[in-house]
Amino acid sequence: MSSGFLRVKTVGFEVRKIYMTRVKGEAEQSSICATLLKPGARQARHHLSDHELAWLAGSLFMAGYETSSNTLTWFMYLMILFPEIQTKAQEQVDQVVGRSRLPTFADAKHLPYIWAIIKEMLRWRPPAPIGMLHATLADDYYEGYFLPKNSIVIPNIWSINRDPEVYENRVEDFYPERHLSSEGKLKDTLDEGHFAFGFGHRSCVGRHVANNALFVDVVTILWAMKMKPVKDEHGKPIVPSIDEERSGGIILNPPKCQFTCTPRFEEVDMILQQARDDILKSTRYTQE
Ligand code: HEM
Image (cartoon, rainbow, N blue to C red; front, side, top):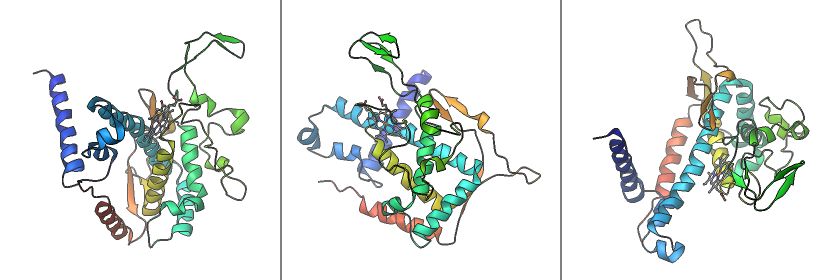
């Protein structure tokens, strides 16, 4: 039996396992897959074939998974690389949220520094640095260059996010304060402050999901735990240099690093357990 065949069988088994537990079984939760599989939903709401439904769920997963998880991986590394940014963010979370409850979306407008970190992560290390390929619909000119109809255009998001005319100074630095006014408020709440989601008609449709998911993940991690690099045998923190970042296809991953996460205060564990139980209870998907 070839290893390719085994791999397909294993993936098939895993997908089925997820389907049985998450969509139909014990750990069932509301999700786009569960909604699409509800009896009647297919014809009544979407008029899509099985094949199209599979691609609908699959393409959202592919577009949203690696982009968001890559940004979160950078976040963990950055909190170790810049402990002063971690402390400053935690001070703001303590002021706004306190320690007796979890952060919620209602806190979002009072936490500009957290948004500044998210914006700066997406500016400094956009998960898709060369975006998506596009094609011109008609003959065009750009800065004296002729682009015939159907030319493939690759947007250099990495470079656009470093335009010195827009970002002025320290374009190569991770500097969340660039998104804040001198009073510590977000300079512009409507503008992303970067081009990581692309632009134009085909810009990322998942940007609001992505921003909100990053917000709630980042703020909950900061609220709950202190992240510190592990130490070597002389007690010196081991923080890999940014030069050790790793390429994974078109995505850049942070350097491999080991760190410890410790609860910031005694009640963290209990509050998180309680929230987990509440969420599981309230999102349980009941079959019609
Ligand atoms: C940090 C997270 C994310 C980043 C940086 C990101 C970035 C992008 C980029 C650069 C594009 C191509 C835009 C273009 O063609 O110019 C794109 C397209 C797309 N994204 Fe995202 N994305 C993220 C998260 C998500 C999430 C969470 C979802 C879904 C829930 C999603 C769904 C999509 C879809 C469906 C498209 C194709 C849109 C189209 O072609 O019309 N993305 N994204």
